[in-house]
Image (cartoon, rainbow, N blue to C red):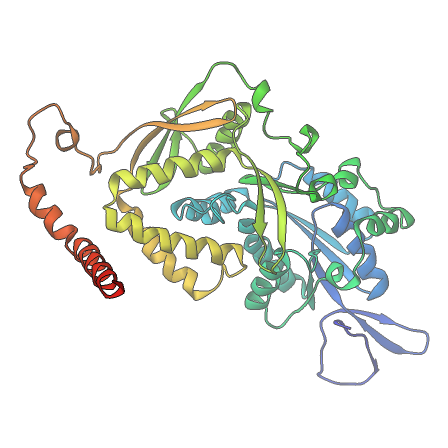
Length: 436
């Protein structure tokens, strides 16, 4: 058992234990745990409140962190209080999430396995950070989350919480109890916990950077996601019949304006979600390798992320040298893996951040994109730091590029390739001569 219950007699002692103290009829003190629970208002964490109260005789403090999930934050607070929590904290962290988590991900072109903009992954270290802050403030003895033993979130929460609050217990009851989703729903009904229709069909996790949809018929990788699974994007076939052009301006790798209008960080992401979603852009359906070794079918809606990351990658190619672009691909891949794999607080990520931030100094300019029926294409770009020179690239006018130099370059560039093939031919002839 991960938490404890200890009985002590009344004594004059300096020994102290943080927790809730109840006095029994026999004059003993029952010292009970106090847990801070990451609370979404959904099925898993609502069940957890009752589970912690009954199984561990624990006082529960719930924390709901608003990272732009577009859910009823006040409703979650009311639900938590109805379920008998000691305290509930609603924290608006949307601005912090954008500037300190999303924008670093943009700089790193963060796409896990080339497709997933790690929307869920990015929010976990921020939620964990807020949990620890509340735990310290309220004198809690433990931290709890609703992650299963099959997913990646357990890793993200456990490592981040353990790094930031090594003196606290960390428990994941869902991982330990082994309940199926149907059993959770039955438990919730037995305890009078409201269960939404959406909870019965899908498991949803969202932030302003994206929306993840799992469970139900989506667990069959051959089933096409039904339209009811999507909320932020229209079906491409129902999108407008006229394409829309959008221009995103970057300064030092960070998006700062849309269509020449300067926007605050959060406002910019929300604006792009609406524009891209209207055109059915940002739907992702792929087979993903979870950190725990399971291959899973994942469905996401990431309208703003899809557009902004595509624009950023394109602008980098315009302002960086070939060597920078190629090397940064390795750095980006390692960065996104660390973020995905729960190692946000690992020192290697800090090291990579230093390189990435330095690389972004010249990533300033505009990228124009065309959105149409679920499709996305970069159709133009310009930058005061551009290494592209149309006078060098142009085939139809005289330029400063001396074409005669190319012959010597080709001679040296392909020297070893020609040597290898000459040797291969010579060896083949020798073998042929011996066989005759």
